[in-house]
Each structure stands twice: as C-alpha cells, then as structure tokens.
Length: 384
Image (cartoon, rainbow, N blue to C red; front, top):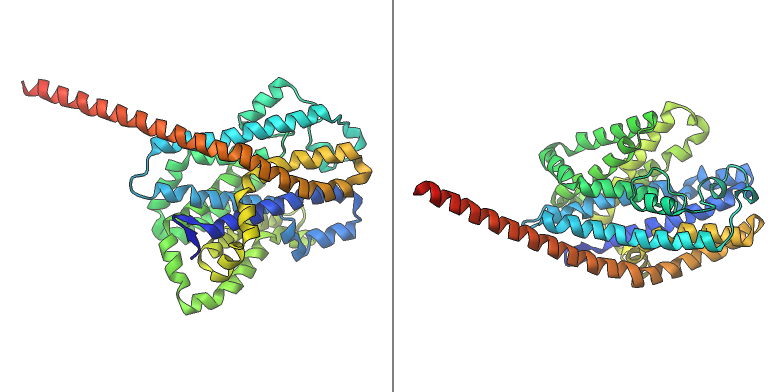
C-alpha cells in the first residue's frame, strides 16, 4: 500500500487523473460545435469517452470526498469543533480567490455571446458581464448556477456534504453490516433524483458511497488479499469503467428513455468501484503513484477551480473560429496557473484552515471546562 502516514497516495493520483479529465472534457465542449456528428460520436459513444468523462469524474471526486473526509472522523480523538471551521476555510478561501480571478478575466476581456456557436457551452454557460451581486451570490456556493466559474456547481454539493458529515458517518456506521444493499439504495436514489430533476437527491447519495467505503476499508483490504479476489480485480476495473460511461455508450439506444437515467445513476457505482480499486489493487496503486499523477493530485483542486475561466477567456480573446488554438493553449496554461494558484492560494488556505481548526478546538475545550466547572458547583450546592 502506497501511503504517506495516514494519506493514501494512490487516491491523490486518482484525484489528479479526475481533474485532468474534467479539463479535457471542457476543452472538448469548446470543440464540439466544430466537429461533425460522426466525430463527436466517436469521442463520446466509444471507450474514448473515458478521457472526456467530466461529469463522471466529478462523481469520482464526490466518492473520494466521502471517503477521505470521513476517515479522520472514524478515528479516536477526532474533534468536530476543529473539523467544521477548518473544512469551511479549506473550501471557501480557494473558491473566493478563484471567483475573484475569474471575475477579473470577465472584466478584462470583452465577451459577446452572439459570437459563439448557438447552444454551445461557451454561449450558454459563461458569464459575459458581472456585478457585485452576482459575485457575492456565487461566492456563497448556495446558487444552482455559476456562470463566472462554471465548475463551482459541484462545490455546492461538497459544502452540503461537509456540513452533513456527522449524519453521513452516523448512517454509515449503523448500516455497515448491510453495505451492499445500502450502496444499491444510493444508486436508486440517484436515479430518482435524476428522473425528478432533484439535484440534491441525484448527487448527495454519491458521497455516502465514499463514506461506506471508509467504514469498511479494513475488510476491503483484507478481501483484496484473497487470491480469487485478486484475479477478479482487472475485470472489476473493466466493469467500473463501463458503468462510469454506460449512459454514453448506450446513448443511441436509450436517449430520451428512462433507461438513460438508470445508466446515469450507475456511474456513481462505477466511481465507487474505481476508488476501491485505487485503494486495494496494487497495479492501480503503482499507476496512480507515479510522479506525474501525484503532481496532478497535489494541484487538482486548484486545477479544477481555475481551468474553466481560462479556457473561456482564451476562446473569447482569440475568437470562436480559433477554438483549436484556445484549447491548445488553454490546457498547458491551466496546468501552469494551477501550480501557481496552489502555491500562492491553496497552500495558504490550508495553513489558515489549520489555524481556524485549532481555534475552534480551543474554544470548544474552554466551553467544556466551563460546563464541567458549572456542573461541579451545582453538585456541591445541592450537597450542602
């Protein structure tokens, strides 16, 4: 097992891989209007979709959060008073910085949506102007749309999960003997959320899959030592990848039917299997622990936050017809800016989050001491 202390390095690599796929996914959305239907089908309705599965990669992020955020909460000595302020600082500070940078780009580079292809990602999902009210409302992570920095929609669910972590841990511990049927139930809830248009029901159960993995992690590692299980792991990897993009592979047959929603929900199960494989399968661990994957994992949050505004700005700056150049420049530029953002913003936010957590723990300790003192005084008064 490739670990650094309590940190599982292969999960960092998986996070980096997912962030890279989201980057390529958004670049492909810029290219989509310029590709013929056959070319787009080749990219999205074949196994090549694995390289462009941006929405599905976000599900991998959600499962990862459910696992790695819950794991410390399962250890003795965990402090909720430390966790909540640290987690909120960890989420909000990079988001605020990224949103500020994206706002500046919108103001510096003129944007006219009519110059972009009709019904494209560039026309429909990118802000062409900003106001103070827009920035402040998107900064809260409580909106359903985020045109200034398109990716923040997923941070909204990360925030809700972070606040609800005690409930997730409580549920996972109480159903730990029935993990498989509960996991099936989470996929069913995702399906219901998808069909009814309830985004909370579609996405919040994905985090529970990661929390379930956290409470059964020792058993999963033990299972991986079984020779039969070891021989099955490559086939499980194939099945996980197929489930992740099944709704795309079957799109010609299921588009507009309820089967499409069923297959979409299966992507959550595929994401969970990929996370499990990253933890227990030696081949996956080695592949995800190489230096490029580890570097991507280190800057993955920064890359996720900064890449969409960069791609959009380049497309408007160069013109819609130069979409290929915007993509060609945007991918390496996003990686470079992510490294800079990580060094200047994310690392600083981690330090401030740690301090906020320490302050929260200290305040909770003081409150506890006062409560004990008050209880003792009441007990002595009653004894007299």
